[in-house]
Length: 207
Image (cartoon, rainbow, N blue to C red; front, side, top):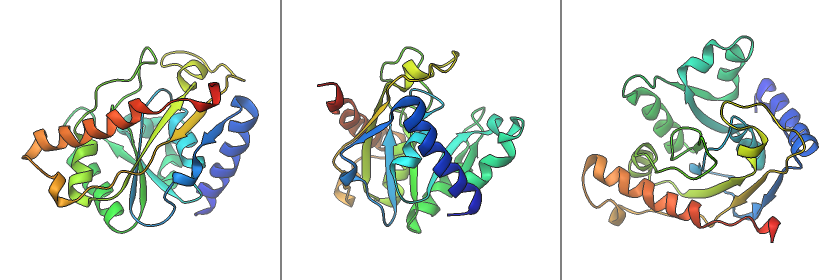
């Protein structure tokens, strides 16, 4: 890990545990070596750092380009492996960069829904995740976060001491036999398969 990434990693772990009683369920299912896609629902701005500290390895993230304009943080994001995406057009360059990274053995976090939920409910999957799966055939680890929307809702303010839990699912492995169909239809189908797995995860902490 680079110095800035490492500092952010340890600071995020401390704040997550202190301010949100953050816990990871089934951490043994995480893949810590080789190319891998961590696919996760998107509830809050808190999601990327929480996904990152769940792993011991360094990860890469997609984020909308406008975040790079934020004061202070905008200049730090590139050091945290953030890949900017231009949401005003079909930005294939960001996905191509991500595909190259996964093929080279890196790990990435992808939100199949594309954007943060407004009401805390799961949203339909978008084809971007499926594209990365089809081009890399990397294993996919489905993850579902609980409590992040309540802790920091879209358009709202942080609510500290709200418990947040990240549940890790069994890794999904794809082969060429799964690449049935063409183009967007195939990518959408692959994304939906992963989203179904995410939807099936339950917060065992609340049982």
